Amino acid sequence: MENSSRLLFSNQFQLSNGLLSFNRPFLFSRIAITLALLVLSLFSFSSSAQTRIIQDEQGQFEIATTPQRIVVLEFSFVDALAAVGVSPVGVADDNDASRVIPAVRELVQPWESVGMRSQPSLEAIAVLKPDLIIADAERHRTVYQDLQRIAPTLLLKSRGETYQENLESALKIGIALDKQSSMEQRIQQHQHVMAEFKSHFSLKQTVQFAVVSDKGMWLHSPASYAGGVLTTLGIASPIVKPTEKAYLPTSFELLLKTNPDWLLLGAYSHPNIVDDWQKNPLFNVLTSAKNQQVVEVSPALWSLNRGMLAAEQMAKNFEQILDRS
Image (cartoon, rainbow, N blue to C red; front, side, top):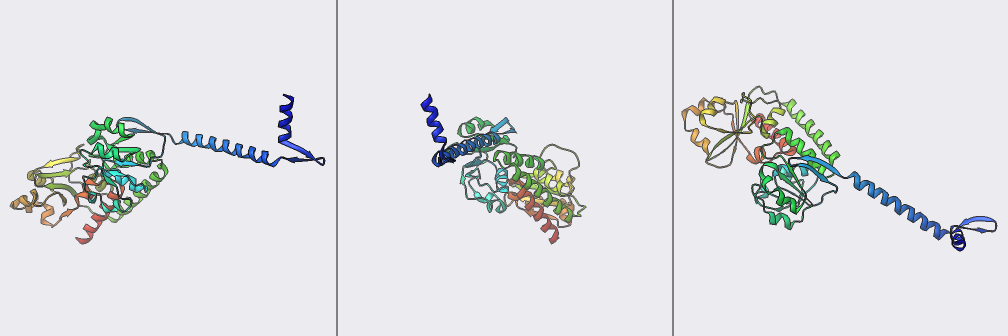
């Protein structure tokens, strides 16, 4: 014990000519050890600080890492990632990347398709080795457990969501990405942009967006995403009766009764049911038809792609429509 104490003492310092001088190699090693312990303690602290708990449509989702390989199964989730500069490695894009609007595509790197949004390929998702999957509560709840076996899966509203619900989902995605601050700033910027667009509009007429195909027409109510965007812009809806349904199957008689001043049509096929209705003399009784305010718009922008970038593009598109009238 005495020898050990002495050895320790001699390693710590030595007397030279009556002056105290430190043994440099030992001092440097002690500093290195101290710094290493400090780094380890900081690392441990940051790891615990990164743990986030998010309330999703399945319950409580917990994540303690910053995901790097993200697969998303709806277009609105691509919009949210693009808004904070994150690129997904895989997207359920219906096997057609062009269905994602250009404003979103130009902000992210090319991705691998994992099939249809309605039925994404589990095999294609697994091959990408994701560390986070973001899925739609309506479309993908039945395969949630299968997705969860591949990677942690965040289940959020997308299909049928309102405008406000989309912003809430975007914030949850920001938290999952460990980019809460960036997402909050982007949401504030978005709200400012939308308020600026709203100040440009002094329209007193009603506006109705609808999707059409050869099978029918569906009005997007104020409870829909597009309806919520128009409401945010201060645009009145012709649908007076409150409804929680986002999409309303519409007959020609119901369209006549709704009678919007502006009718924006997102056509999924040509010809479509409106071509048949236009042959009816009563079609010209519609205010929008009489005033030549039936306008075709992109269904990808106004219906398929929901998100902050999409909403800003919708506002810009509608401003252009009014400028041309």
